[in-house]
Length: 200
Length: 218
View 1 (cartoon, rainbow over the protein chains, first blue to last red):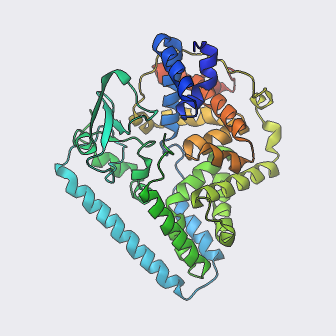
View 2 (cartoon, rainbow over the protein chains, first blue to last red):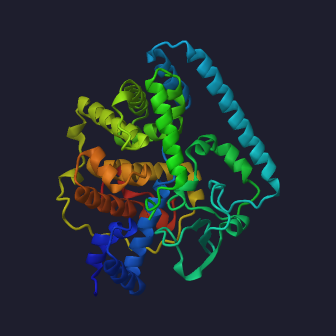
View 3 (cartoon, each protein chain N blue to C red):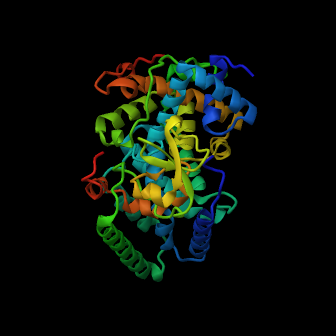
């Protein structure tokens, strides 16, 4: 199947979402190999999705979380366990945060991440085979649509990728990035400090 | 594909949420804080992306979370809690917008034929944009401006699918449109954003983007 540029543009979004048939995918890939314009549109669109998908676009104003909890508290029916529950939750949060900080301070002997804002993705199985690009920053599952630089890819175990400072792709490795961990990792200053010495 | 494996961990997370929800329904209301903690930011950013105003977004985020608490009994386990919460947020934000008669401010692009083909304008060669780029507040500002300049229906689809990572089906259900519409709108939203951001992302962020002055290249 030979495709025109217009045909490729119509399907480029579905292509990135993996919503095209294998035949169409093959035809599009053939077209990308020979068409600089369409490769540029593909890379640009992929960048747009990657940047906006990062979850740091709209920072809530300071105190948002506290105000939200206050509002909830005012509207929550009183329960005898309420106060106790709060204390337990608060204590747990302190413990988790403390553990997280300890965890951070304990990783000094580990390789530093190639990207300051990446999450280490500790849940990725060590022996899982992943794909890395030579000058990329993230590692991917095979077939991930967000693999850049197809020409210089290596397949290595996840543990090795992490040793080399690659961090998990937020798309295909999403299942290993735990939401509650993200809450703790929200403090950008801390993150920057965590990975500070390593600008690549 | 990112959705291909609902992993064991996701399942464990879901079971944990189901357990929390059951206990909240049984009267342990304080557990609601734990249930929503991972999603607080997402609720705000969804509201902000739709309303484009911090104060309204925070207000709507509070309303949405309160509504989720009050209606927790109506939550059906076949959906993800996060998707349900985001749906409530989208509805609250839409109601707020209607109240403020924001429709008259709809950008011209909303009246375009959404089935029509979109032709990209810029073919600058982009390499991978490092995620550190987002550290720069002016870059975040440009991204926010570009998103804000999209018509409502494109913005909503883009926010749910690409920022909140809902599936195409979940996005369609949340917005009450067909999956075909979601795909068409998503295509246009992504390509429009790419064109808007190309001068910065393809080259230097120092250049002024045309949409900053209220003009749109499409």
